[in-house]
Amino acid sequence: MLGWAITFFIIALVAAVFGFGGIAGAAAGIAKIIFFIFVVLLVISLIANALRGRGPKV
Image (tube, rainbow, N blue to C red; front, side, top):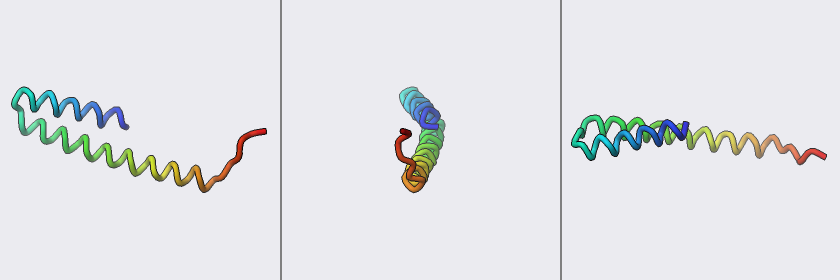
């Protein structure tokens, strides 16, 4: 998912360089949404892993 956010960010940068403001804004918005979804899922995953509390396998 982070890969998708980076891809849309790069698309936004390229579009901005070539002067396509609408496309750049849309791609940047999509990248921002995907990035925040990634962060939320990461935090949920870290909390779930901490609550599960499995120790190292012996």
